[in-house]
Amino acid sequence: MKRAAIFKTLDHDAYTDYITTWEKRAINPNSLEFKKTESGEYSLRSIFSDDIKTIKPAKFGFHGELIMLTSQSNSSGATNFMASVQAARPVTLIGEKTDGNPLGPTAGTIFFLKLPESGIRLRLPVIRFENNVGDLPKGEGLTPYILAPTTVTSVRAGKDPAMDAALKIIGEMDAGSQ
Image 1 (cartoon, rainbow, N blue to C red):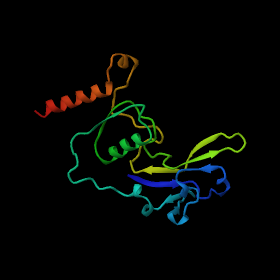
Image 2: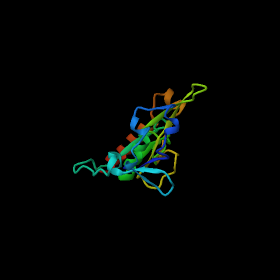
Image 3: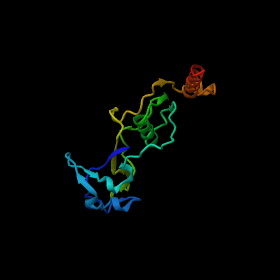
Image 4: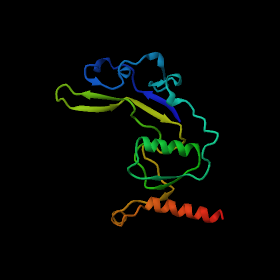
């Protein structure tokens, strides 16, 4: 469901003494794997990444009503997954607004930059992924269709408002199908 993997620059030569990463190829990437965009950034060519290929739905996949529970604890990969599912098929989101950016994460490969004077170490995302999820607000998380926030009162009572709302909808669907 990703549309592109974007790099701001491919030239990290001035920083190689200060950066490390688990994906060593990212420090000196092969320029043939990228094409320059109109904005001057670099997009990874789709033939070099399985993440950018379209996945065909399974012939016998689930086609029923789909409900996903959301919370403020959902971010990064979880928000991306929910946005991708939402773009592919109808889904009812129940709970709280998520964190994260449904349009794509700025993670995957991270550079660790150690500042030479202070020794402070920073985590710098290298790739900005662009998900193929339609027109969602950038960096604002996903807003559920049915708001069912967790509160202090619900936690003290051992209640899960999102699950309770989902079970109520499922009960109504079951009653309507009889």
